[in-house]
Image (tube, rainbow, N blue to C red; front, side, top):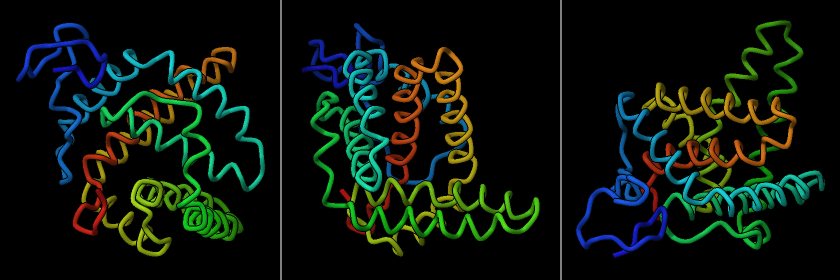
Length: 222
């Protein structure tokens, strides 16, 4: 059999890859609430995936940054980027630049979701101090739904409802994911900016692995 992370041949039934030391069972993360103690394992899995696919992820991220500045269309490119990283996280293939341009099926719902969150955040910011904090909280609460739309073609309203439910049921893990992913991304910007080409995919792997642990399979998502 083949390791889903480094693609090297390993013994059938092996639970640990002898080449990259990854936990082979990690590609089939449970779609249920998990404890905060599992977050370290999640990060470890993300690091192993990142190291095994670094070159492809770096190229994907570089092209993504170049096209991200195109207004409106960038929503579709974001969806393509997330799906490409999801593909890597699930052991379904390697990250490819072409993935950036192949996620237009969820464009309408995702654009509506982004606009809804942004408009609400703008209005919240009119309230001094508390408004800013409320806008940050809204962005955090809306995060899971963002991935649900991209992965499962969920509608805008359903995604927002599920996002709130997921945050409520898995608050600690989502909070840790949000903080760690943010810190890793910022670290790449601080290191001569171009460092984000290396750190952004690691942060995204952490995000999508957390999403994969709690994705709403009961609502028809794969």
